[in-house]
Image 1 (tube, rainbow, N blue to C red):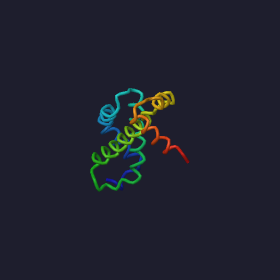
Image 2: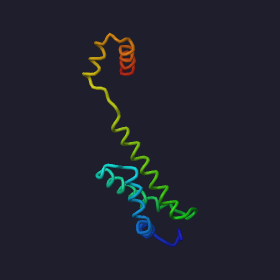
Image 3: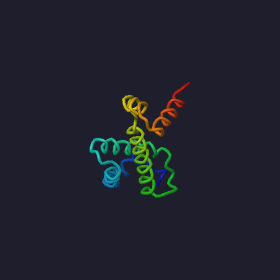
Image 4: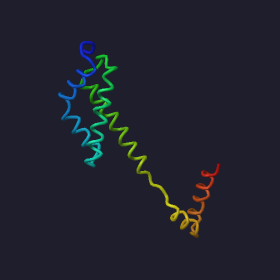
Length: 116
């Protein structure tokens, strides 16, 4: 089957057969509706691209779910990096004025990391 169909035909068959499941997978990974739509679109694009290398050594279902899972995992990790807890300059100034030695020590570490 892998050699008989074009990349587009494989994608259309997979999207028709697994489209609803891919939407459920996106919903399981992403709660925000706008980001969920973005994730679903990323999954479909990655799935289409992946069929250029699909050789049929695994089932179509396995392939589709593995691609979708990998895209969703990357999406979640990227979102985590974007939402990293940054310290404001005001919070640093308050910590510098603190009499708490561990707080001041952590500022010394931050200063060491930011020096060229």
